Length: 435
Image 1 (cartoon, rainbow, N blue to C red):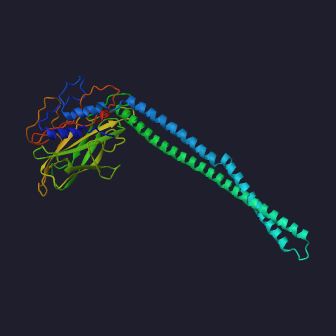
Image 2: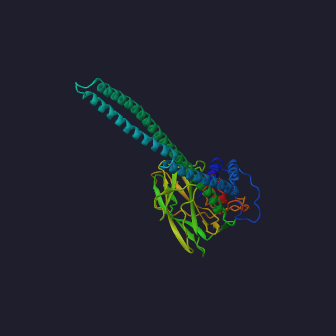
Image 3: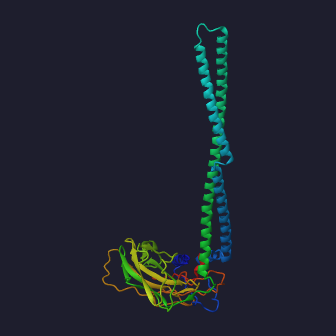
């Protein structure tokens, strides 16, 4: 399940515009939010959102892909039947080839008999005694000449029969090869059509899942919590630290599928230069023990299900490259849920856990754990911080989206950047508006 790249674009916008003001509307507000000035990055994101196919368009595409696949299956079935027909001994070319082969065998036998007749006639001539009459010698010579003529005729007949048999066999083989080639092409066409059909079906199913089959709005659920523990407040460049993300269903109902989300952002001390390429956040869980790198486009693996009043721990690992300069970092976490009945939602705030990056070789000594941000900007009057480090968080943006749009409560988050007056904004929207 993808999360729109708005998180990354907002971070990039903040790096290039350090005095960017937050504009985060109240979560699920009843009134339509006031129009806010958007930077070029947000405009591009909006353009991408508007170009996303509607559910109706996806349904039409899925129907067309199914029709193409059904036609391909029918064509493959016909090609298979055609191949089976030409492979049959009763096919016209098979019958013709068999008859030509029999004629060749018969011609070969006739030639053999004719050749033997020549041998016998020659033997008769050779066996004539010296007392044989002229008539006897003439008759023997006549028989030899006739046998030789018959042998030549049989030879020519055999050559013709052999040629006909070879041509008939070749025609039958060519027909078989052509039929087999057509079946192979039909099978490849069916495979390609099936891939297209599956892709179209998946896209439609994803849109329906994100929107809820009944078109219900996703709702904020504060009892679904994502809490980081064990992340040091100072991480030295060239080291890695392990910590834990605990996902808790604090409600009295099972959540059929819970999707955790995490993301890390870092800057140098000025807060103006991103060093995201020098930090890497990874995770593993009971269902996926191999370490995987998180990004701003995808959830982590789903927890299916997460029963009421229970929690699941996900192992996390933060690596900071040795070349990273001293600076600031923040790890964001959130979680969404989807139920089989189409209901969905998630915790309304994207929690940010701030930490300092110490230069390689530093000895920070014993440090405490990074703490979640306490400030939750809810309106456009939140001002850009001028200096220092400030806890961060955010809220779901009111959408007012019609039920035709895929509806998912969480897609990214809102956050205030750290250090040097830099501010970056990530607005959480419905996942149906993937850019």
